[in-house]
Amino acid sequence: MKYVKHEMGSYNLHVIKTDHFKTVNMRIMFKRKTKKEEINYRNFLSLILLESTKNYPTKREIEIKCEQLYALSCRNEAFISGNYSIISFDSTFLNEKYTEKGLFKNIFEFLFDIILNPNIVDGKFDYNSFENVKKSLINNIESIADIPDYYSEDKILEIVGKGTPIGLKNEGYLESIDEVTESNLYEYYKSVIKSDNIDIFIIGDIDDEYIKKIVSQTIPINTLKKPTGSHYIEHEKIRKRAQVIHEQSEYKQSQLLLCYKLDKLTDFEKQYVMPFYNYILGGAGDSKLFQTVREKNSLCYGIGSRHIVIANLLVIKAGIDASNYKKAVSLIRKEVKNMEKGLFDESDVEKAKSVLLNTYEELEDSPANVISVYMLHEYLNKDLLDKRAKNVEKVTKQMIVDLAKKIHLDTIYFLEGKHS
Image 1 (cartoon, helix red, strand yellow):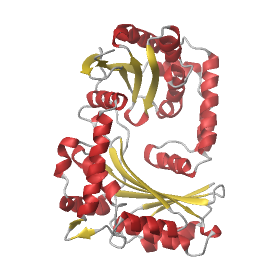
Image 2 (cartoon, rainbow, N blue to C red):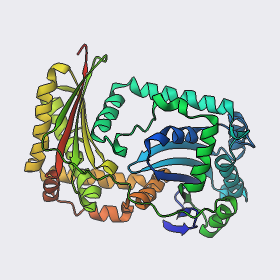
Image 3 (tube, rainbow, N blue to C red):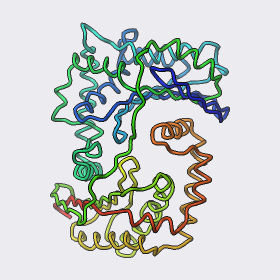
Image 4 (tube, rainbow, N blue to C red):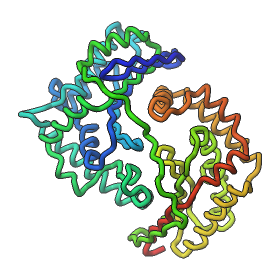
């Protein structure tokens, strides 16, 4: 696998050459500093650009063109990555080695036509496309609010991350959705094209210089962009005593979440030691939390922990009956304390190591995952796969115990079901 990064001034082109796949995958990333008032706009843009273009004014015409280009597939997403907000356009297409010469050029022209030639009528986005996207976004926001699992995690991050990007909702905000109009969305779109940092990742059995030439001919953007800063969010305040937030709900099942802040982890701890800690504590079916809270005491329907790398947080989540609240909290806190005391075995460390190494190997089987590896290398300074495998081997039980002392409980959030 050969990787080359071209700094083109107005964008960066990342080419990953490999003969493992017959397809070519491309991911185009637009990023800028995260702001709450822009989240709805970015969600609108991620969808509306695939609704229609000037040359393909209906979604059906876009679909037909994709079929003509050997079943080209396009996906889109807007998401928050710590201090930065990203709009991502992903596409997968056959290598022209197996189809016809010139396919790359035709596909790139079509894809950049979608992004750079939107369906603008009288200085604003097409009304029908806009309304379709608006309905979709409203449905998405409302559906997340109706699912206790999603709602509760949104809520605890909003509480813990107040005043920071951690507390912002990736899906957007219903109360301000009407502030976005066809006209001001177009003005925001122009600002994105002009000001956002742009990265283009391409992977496949491709010639680096050939791809560079086609892309440079296809993208008319020439605004110079400044390098960006860190995506990671560091915590200014560590609580000495956790806050407890109790909320009533209409749901039958209660949701219990404990959020821990990670204080001043080294890069090595973030990348390598923390995955071990999380796996042993609550990241597997036989984790300490699962064995104690679910198996031995039957206090929950399910329990697990999640390391939110970009936010330096650990979230433990359990679905419980309301009557089990106090005992569940007590047992969870005890297991976290046990990690600090080193009350786990070397066999737990070896099992976590084996799982992580297998995960790294599996990443190489998917072009989208390989792109993500290089994207995280670029944005979060994460190591590439060959270095990851070597560093995983260095992690020891003592490293995990030392890291456990840097984990501090910030908030206990309990969404209590009425009929639990």
